[in-house]
Image 1 (cartoon, helix red, strand yellow):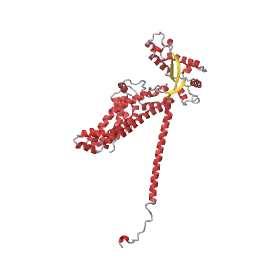
Image 2 (cartoon, one colour):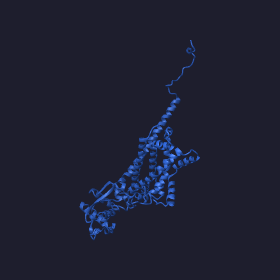
Image 3 (tube, helix red, strand yellow):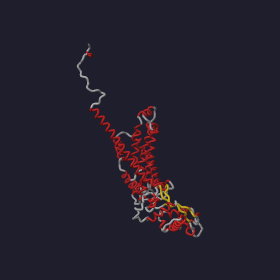
Image 4 (spheres, helix red, strand yellow):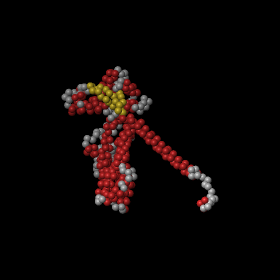
Length: 449
């Protein structure tokens, strides 16, 4: 008998590997709790996101619709062109006060045509319209002087109180102390609704129009501010992308590793964390006070946002260059390529998806910035017309979408508050589109090593 077959008197184990001991059970319970905590955290995050989106949509969708009053207006020659010569210069001399009687007459005609009953005078009826109604009529006549003497159907903006009444924002109880509208006018509005003269429809002017004064919130639009943001993004793209990529290539591929480059890298990382309002102060001091560039111009806003975006682009570009395996560089150098050829012909094309992604994310961050724009005066000017040339778009005073939203949010009329939420919806659409483009570009061109 060998030693292997001898009974050593060893005691058989009391437990099996298939049986969980107390310590393993505790570890498994801790892991289950951690998974539960993670699921709860994700659920809370999704709930907050849904709440945020629901709030934005519920408060902002009303800005995309507007209340209009449709009437037939007699463009009387005796009021607009007494000489009958159709001389445009003489027609322009008729101010908006000269068009007010035409609008009053149109209301009287509407009441008579539809058999409506009201004790309101025509002057009181006309107050349900926007204060821009007479100006709208005058602009049409100046553009079409041949229509004088004709009866033309016009669609006028209703004032903000009537629009709020149509959207449920204004009620008969809430207007008890409101001097801008009366219950009798609301009764007249109900009659106009019944005959189809007052309707609520989609308002394209909110998307393509310009901001309006505090007296005309119903006429305010975000289109010109969108153009201001577009020109700023063009400046940022034209400056931040080449400068940021060039600096990243030099620091990552060509710069010697010493204390000077270490200081530069630390400062770039610190600049990425600097509050954006600091860049606004820098832009105010350098570009406006020292260089005397025009205040509130998209060019200045683009320069400020370029300074703010550069650290983000440099950091993301360096990360993309580092992600390219060293073997690519070694192979290029091994077949006789110079250092510059290896970088520009091999490394840079492979890092391009990451560079594009970082650039788009940096532009999206710049698009939503407000604080730097406040300091360079991009909320102190109301641009009433679209820029006609690139030079005018860059140098003429304008606003930007985030600054325009801030300006609307601080105004007193609830209609401006509604437009602020509507502007947030448009801004979010731009930001989501840019981030989606960044993800698609990365997935389309990314290579797995």
